[in-house]
Image (cartoon, rainbow, N blue to C red):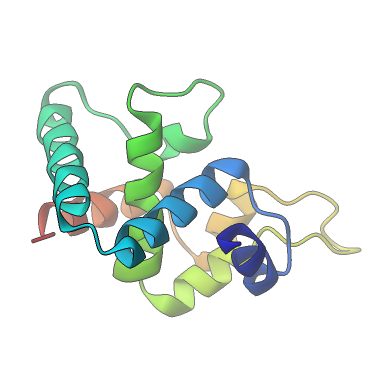
Length: 134
């Protein structure tokens, strides 16, 4: 249901990793299971803390290879889009997946361009938001 709503907002069919991440993020917030939500937050923060050594980037979500803990990262990024990022940029990002006569192919790169986000800047903003989650 969330996938259909997000696709409607975007005016396009979004990638499955985005559907899954946003869907699960909404589920965690609406379920009302505080223990499940706290466990998720702790896992995400733990991954980000470990990542300071090895590092990972938000772009790994849409790369050809899935990183370890892919699902957790997708949910965290979905949460960021829903609850942490600038709403105007999120709207442009989602709209960047639309095709048209001028744009025959749309993907994450076109979405980032439309939102005026650079992947590295988005990565920094996302990680900063995660570390501030209470």
